[in-house]
Image (cartoon, rainbow, N blue to C red; front, side):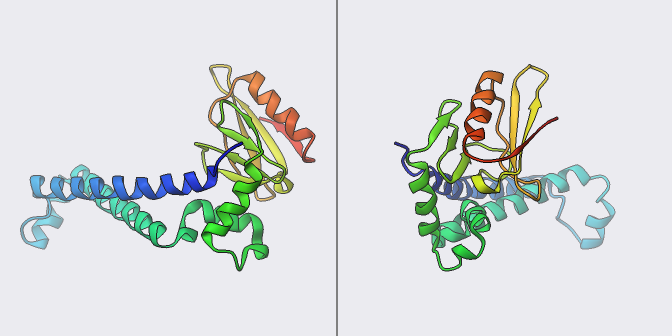
Length: 200
């Protein structure tokens, strides 16, 4: 029995934002002070822009990225439905999710995944209605009824990645799997959803 994989995903995202955000912000501000690229009259800063382009780019990346992560973490802590996973679930449910809170959205999916089949050492969950990929590239979740294709891509090492796509071509992408594990997942899905398999 799986325990709250979506709720855990939401908590991890919030924690990362609250921990990594301030570190990036502090590093960006510290680098700006140490290099002094923003000190002096504005015209001098502009004149030196080409010379200090790398420093300025790194500083802005750290400050803007850190600010966004911190904001996302605080917002997720206050409003669970603002987390990425809740937004993905809400999109999968469309109008049916209009009145559900973030906690209700997570609980809805976690109830289905509580008895899900697991693959690849517990990183891929296939329930009766939902598919969830832990550490996915892109969004981690999709409703089985929305799967239109399973894209099968072989890596140079001979392993396989799978992408479960909806009508718009978006969906969870797994990390590298063995060919045997990928085959087991595809065979399991063939019994649960009707999809057109496309090899790339």
